[in-house]
Length: 430
Image (cartoon, rainbow, N blue to C red; front, side):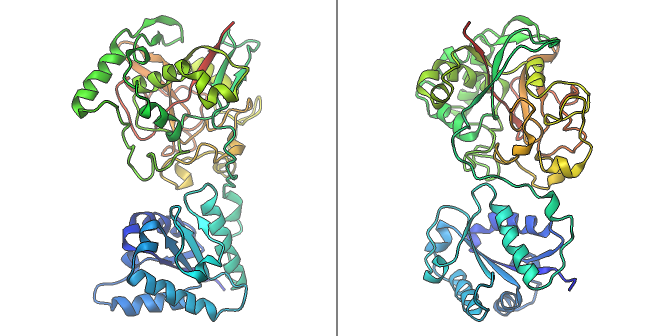
């Protein structure tokens, strides 16, 4: 058979944004034909009749569940009952109804509780969902393009033990970095930054004063003085708040509802203040407990020279962090297994541990794609333009090559956007 697998999306109207995103991701699979009311119903059609027909004719039904939908009575419950009734007609063991939890809700139907559900808020959930649909397609003799499974990313279950890890980078021969340092294994996540937002002394001047300045060649040239603190005071006056909430903090794809996604929407000043807060509170935080060998003397954003070294070095010019010495990846298939980029089709950030194959040769994660990372140094002092490294989720495979400096992506220290993130660098006590 050459037809696609038909999949009916059962959901409550309140969950439409999340289900719409699911519909887009399923539609990108050429072998899947998802059915969503707002996309498939035509003006003048009988709403109830068409939904019943679509559900009965579907090869599989995904029942999207949330705290809202399980507590709601009405049409969505009718759809669920109809789906379960049709499932009872299928041979035992058939994958037909797939419960998909959008949040940590408790399914109300006893028959649903007997089925293994997927948690769409966890890493690897979309891939697990595709595996179930793949199995259903195979059972129906539906042909699937051979290259589909090959480019999928295998996201490991997160064990929760290394998000706070720092990687030690020793002095290396012929390096532009004359000192050893430690660097965050991952970019700073939403959940990590939230601790700073919740701190009672968030606006303490000690966190916002005298950030170090570095020139285009990553050499020290003084400090920012009161610039960071003045920025904070001006922003707090605008918001009439005691805390400066990151831009996109409440966005469903980028914000706090995605705890393990890299933080975005913070300025250079905010990122630098977090580094200082982490230093001042090191001993009582998980970072201090989980990196007992590191006794930091100072913490800040990385210099480009330090960041490139942690990413494996800048030679050859078009290499990626995972490339061994002298090599440069050219295969899009390989890149899609290692980085969140435009060609991935995700169109937003992903959890920082999503791409284990993308770790640098020194073990640092997520250094290509996902988010641009603020650097400590200028790229043009005259206009106070600061450097970035790493590329982001909306850029293509050619831009993501990290080792070349990208002059077109620069920003002033007060700017913030949905692909601006950062990671922390620590200089150890001698």
